[in-house]
Length: 112
Image (cartoon, rainbow, N blue to C red; front, side, top):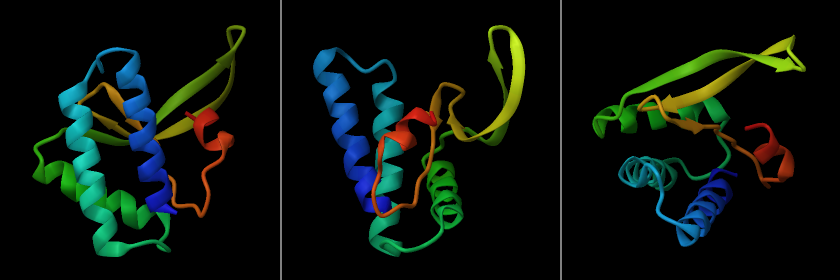
């Protein structure tokens, strides 16, 4: 569920912040604000693409640049394995992997 991921994302970011200053604090806070505006509008239950398109609208309104569905090569020991699509890269420095699930498990974090 989108709500669960947002709350876990906030908890994760604040946990990192306790360890030290966030590298991109201002941008991260803007992204969280964009995401938080989406959930009250839609609630839960929509496919990931709906939340992604809404987030893109909010990012544009916030003046944040983004790239969507960037293809990256995956290597192991110098050998090409596959390609992987990244959901969003914000301001060329922050990776956003969207999930629309009832529960977020460790596989969601390892995917990043």
